[in-house]
Image (cartoon, rainbow, N blue to C red; front, side, top):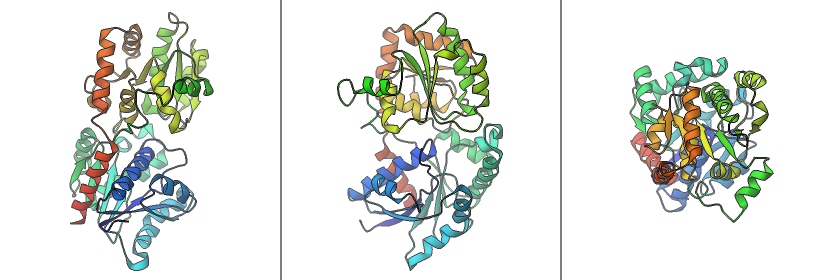
Length: 382
């Protein structure tokens, strides 16, 4: 490993089936490891759960993996408060910076701390989350604002709202996510591979795709309502929902129980990352009309695959898409249906947006994101 700034990255919260912040942590770890292997002056240490070292050794081979955190949410939270500082001191050679990539940090740390804030919905929309998580993450946000040496926000809107609510004492940097262009590309890895992948998942020939955790802020009842408007006239079209079930999926369940189009809605649940590009490339339309997101990475990944995208206006997804997506009011299922129909109709405007989407997505890379993170670590260590 290269001599240089030592960074301890706490990866202990990433579940076996990662989404959202978990995917960010994995992609960042991989990119930081590649920088270290490529000669960057960075010594990366991953603080993992005791049962999870094999995964992280594969993700970040140039990093040192320390399986020090316990299994189970409760024990791991206690470890993050009391055991993590002790783990940093152990062996008498503490790293230069600790990075908490998922809101949290210990109350006291022997080294400077960088914390990533993904969004402020725990404060603004507690009804979208389990009560226990609201209590934990509101406390974490207040602590990061008061005690972190530097805060990373994943988008400018998130940073602006975080500063407005919490008035942090530390500097705040905006560092966007990247796109894994080796996987998320308009080109399938081999002729027929995408079709085989989708057939293996039971996906129909023509479908509207939503990719994301099944939770209230994803606005899936609005997606179902929009699909109902299209289903009568377009009898071959189906709706495919990809994402694990989370808290608050009862509204979607209720909508489907009464929907006349329920028989043409397929819920695939959690799908391995390797299958996502194929699903995106073969979709007639990708819809991502979330009520609010910190970054909305699936929207950019859709653009990188050349997929037509419909998303929420006045959102970070629309801002990132820079005109490549059709953007409509998230809560207006009628306009959402019209936007989907416009994409299905095809034409020169669709092709213009598709080409623009590839250009926009190309501006985002995990290498650039990792380099910006290293600069943030260096600033915190001063």
